[in-house]
Amino acid sequence: MKKKFETLNENRQAILATNFYNFETLKAILLAAKERNDDIILQLTQSSINYLGLENAVSMAKSGLKYYGVNGYLHLDHGGSIELVESCLKAGFDSVMFDGSELPLEQNIELTRKVVKMAALYDVNVEAELGYIAKLGQSKEKVAYTSAEDAKRFVDATGVNTLAVAIGTAHGFYKEEPKLEFNRLSEIKEAVKIPLVLHGGSGVPVEDVKEAIRRGICKVNVATELKNAFMLTLKQILNDTEEIDLRKVFPPATDAVKALVVGKLEMVTV
Image 1 (cartoon, rainbow, N blue to C red):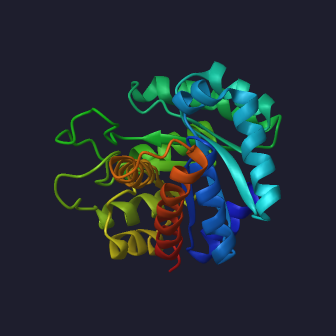
Image 2 (cartoon, rainbow, N blue to C red):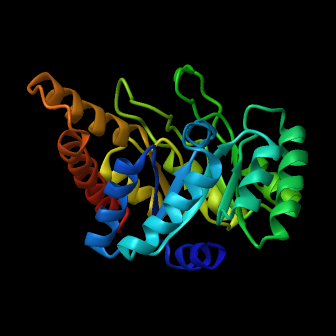
C-alpha cells in the first residue's frame, strides 16, 4: 500500500476505501471493483472485528480478493489501541490506522510514533487522524479543523504514512450538505506532502470529493451509505414476502450495495 499511495500522491489520484460487515457487503464491494477493474481498500473497525472474529475477517477479505480477481488491500479503520493495531499487524493487514484524534496532541504524537515503529517491522502503511471528525453519535456542531502547522508538526514527529484531516466532513449522515474547507486542505497538503485521507465520505457531493482529490486527498472513506443501502433494501423485501431463505432475500440487498459502490468508484476517478 505504501507504493500504491506514492503513485496516487504523485498523480493527484485517490482510491476508495469501504467498510464491510458480513459476506454480503464484502461480496458487493468486490463485485463492484471487479466490474470497473478498480483497486479497492477493504476496511474493518474494532466492532466489525469483534463481530466477525479477527482471523475469520482477514480470511474472508483475502480469499474474497483472490476469488473475485480484485487487486485490493485490507485496512484497520479507527484503531483505538496499540494492542488492536498489533493484533492486526500480526494477522496480515496491509494498513493500520491508529486514531488518537480525541487525545491531546502530544499524546496522539507519542502513541502514533510507537505504532509507526511497530508497523515498520511489517512494512505496513500507517494512517493517523488529526483534528475533530465527528464519529457516529458525536456532535457535528463542534468544529476543530486540522491546521497546516499542527499537521506538519505531527507528521514530522511521527513519520506517519497517511493522514486523515478534518476539513468539514463527519461520520454518518449529514443533516445538511457539508461545507469542505478546500483552502485549508491545500495549506495542509503544501505543509506535509504525504497522502491525505478524507473520512466521512458518505453524502459528500461528488464534485466536492473530486475537488478534494485534486487538492491532495488520496483515500476516500465510505461506510454509512453501504449499511444504509443494504438494510433499506432488505427491510423492503422482508415487508413484502414470507420468504425465509436467506439465499433469496439477501441478493437484492447485495446488489443495492454493489450499485452504490460502483458509483463511489466512479466518484473517486478524477
